[in-house]
Length: 63
Length: 63
DNA sequence: CCCATATGTAAAGCACACTTTACATATGGG
DNA sequence: CCCATATGTAAAGTGTGCTTTACATATGGG
Image (cartoon, rainbow over all chains, first blue to last red; front, side, top):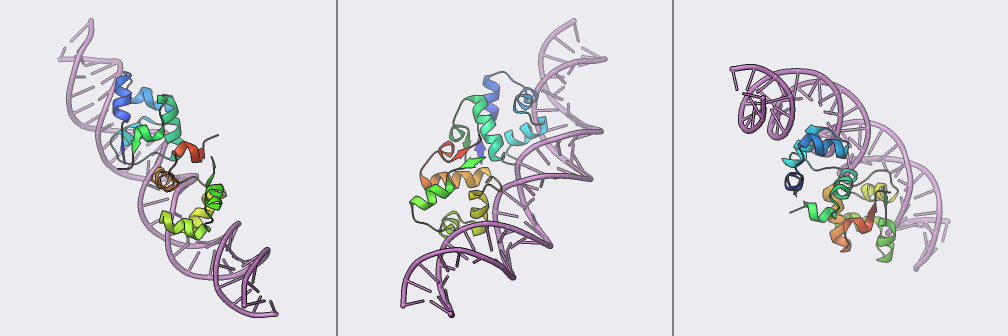
């Protein structure tokens, strides 16, 4: 599953640690998501979508 | 996390087994999702949304 | 009455989502 | 140069998403 996390984060000038804090997950989790090592849980996907004020479908692409 | 699976399935006159087959998961998984025992993975949420032709946010509610 | 179909649930097992701790490397500012 | 910050990754542990097999119960049609 592809995602636009790295772009969305960079647009806002946030570090992975900043994003992790806002999402209440570890920095390693953010890194793993950005680099496609695994997909977020559905609840985390909702948290991410809410943070960026976008639909889940606008951030994640099942491809 | 709440979801509208049971309603959407009933509207179409499908059994849990029918839905499981269309989603390519086990009937127990459909039953567990409908009864809120756990949330689907993000890929499965996308499959469900595609099947019902609805956005993920129209089916699942993180509450 | 039977039986087929639908639903709920349990147990054991595997894979993955996420954690903490830890280390390596790059980069830019003093 | 140094050091702080940012990023990538690894290992071990926990919980959960999903599987297969299995059993119990309800319900409606013949």
